[in-house]
Image 1 (cartoon, rainbow, N blue to C red):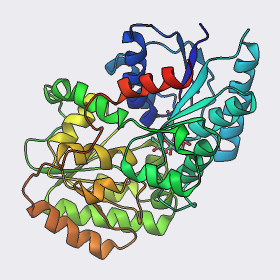
Image 2: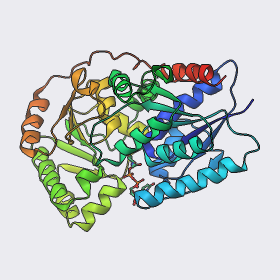
Image 3: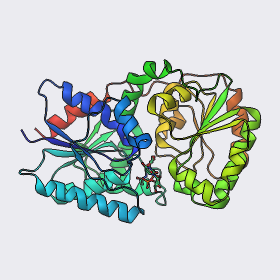
Length: 365
Ligand code: UD1
């Protein structure tokens, strides 16, 4: 039988493909599948450690594209994935892409042009802001996908509004939460020196809108200094953010604050343990908005919009956009909040990948 091709490229993809690969391996019909790593993220700490901790097997194919501007990176992935597909003796059963990174869109485009059907896991999410590269990746990927697997109810409404036929859409739930459910106990058992005994806030920042503009980043550094006067701050710094802090001359200010702990990017288990024990998360990540919702940890999102609105309506997430005054006020409010449990969300139950595999086998028999 022709194999499924599963694509992964950047850090947030790895927690999404791990349960998918497992569900494929455990399915009674053992559908054959190939794992392609584009190499968008290539460091051990952005990629290898996730393969190790999540038990993801070595990729069958590594495209080794590395970092570049968006256009160049997307083009390189397209070229490399296209020559991979061209070398196959028969076309794959379908290409499975996850999330919204450049690798997702690039491989979806290439597969669809070679008439290989595309399945998009985490389809339909929209923040409405086309200045975000991820929003372009979501819109383009969904436009060419033949099977759209949706993680939260807003995705169904967005796809309907965009005129995508309902016959292509399935509500399967959130595969990233599968990984969290499976790994949480192991993560909590971690005894990592990165996790303080005293109350703390965990911070992550990497979006272009926050870290590429010197004034915006300086304002955020100021906000973190203020937060650190109320509660200890633990901040694993994304490579892009580390570069920008250094080039805007802001790194020293953070490094000299003694209640701010800066780290290199952390492993999955250490980061989950850190998040699960935090009083507050401050972030611009998509995944962390969802993980904190599941864990019941208050989350302040430094973005004006979210493609994951259920984290605000049913969860623990508060958006503060560009308003740093509001951010300061919300930090105080959220630190005073008792830990809470979010309303359970349909399909965020640890079994989404099994539903995805059932949908794949039904759609591509
Ligand atoms: C990408 C995704 C973003 C995701 C994020 C998670 C896109 C458009 N963006 O953003 O949606 O939330 O990953 O991390 O696909 N770098 C390293 N080592 C690595 C990878 C990157 O040092 O292993 C550095 C490089 O200097 C690079 C920079 O990080 O220029 C940015 O990497 P890139 O993949 O372009 O985008 P991210 O900002 O990581």
